[in-house]
Amino acid sequence: MKAAVRFFVGLAPWIIIAMIGLPVILPADWWMRVEAVRVADVDEGQMPQMVVIRTIRRDFVADWVATVRRVEAGGSVAVCVARGRNDYRTTSILPAPPKLTLAWWLNGGDCALEPGAYVVTTKWSIDTASPLDKTVTAVSNIFTVLPRPP
Image 1 (spheres, one colour):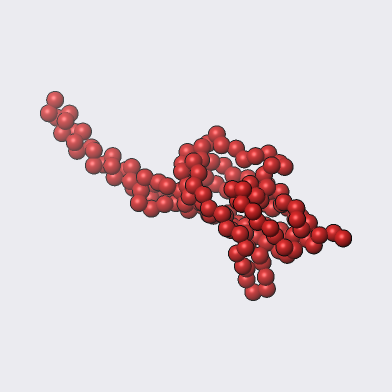
Image 2 (cartoon, rainbow, N blue to C red):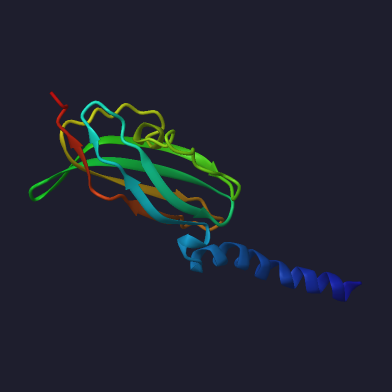
């Protein structure tokens, strides 16, 4: 009996190290992989439709930030930012088109876009059992908001 207790007492620190250390060495795509974020071109005043291809490989909780930037000569300017915290499950699915819109992606946030070129960057900070979070970042295509037709 004493040998079994000593074995488990000796094993406990290794189990704790594995629980904390394993998430540190695993890549972020062990939890989620985002292959594509596509935003459709639209006329001014319309809501852009989106197509997102992602795979949630493990259940997790993450803080996320989605930023819409206007692309200009020499750089880009943030025009809309949305933040949230969500519980992600391997069984989670995104809304089917046409419900997956930029407004949905921004958690219902209003983002009135003037004519111009834009890009959406989304960053997820995945909570892990370790002191270090894992980050997944996805950048959309450059999409265009066209002037309202006469």
